Length: 174
Image (cartoon, rainbow, N blue to C red; front, side):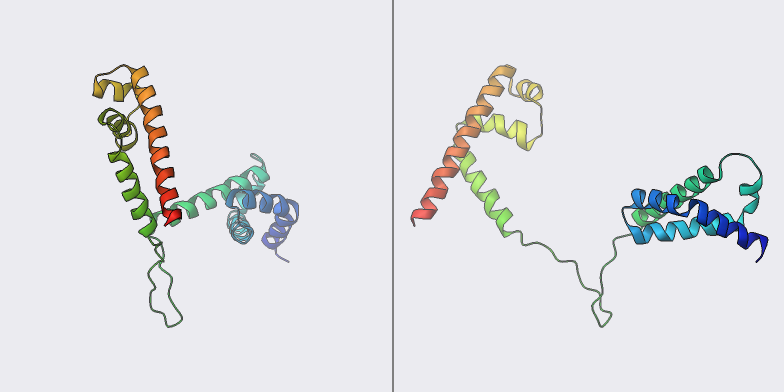
């Protein structure tokens, strides 16, 4: 057995389990963690001088190398466009899209319910929910006190809920 080979065996037997546990915790995937450990041990084999120079901890160096490998893989994966699966014939299959009909119906229902509100109540909800403004920002945009925005939003949401409840009850009766 070569000295390099003996070093790799010694490193793996002494640090392999801890390295695997560390990589598994970082990746959340045992198979990926095993690949990281293997690559870390290969790098240790390629650079035995780092392990035998007496500077720093061997385990610390191995953990740093493993973390860097995981970081590099995550960055590489994020830089690539999402893979499109292929069917059995090798033809790319478009990702499955959820049916957006329910979202459209919900949007139409909410818009109809919004039409049933007073202009003051509708204006407050538009500022807060559709424009994403805070209470203070909505108050400034509408030229009313913040407390008024709070109370109008409370009563507007209550009126919306009542309208939608009535509407869902009508659908059940029909």
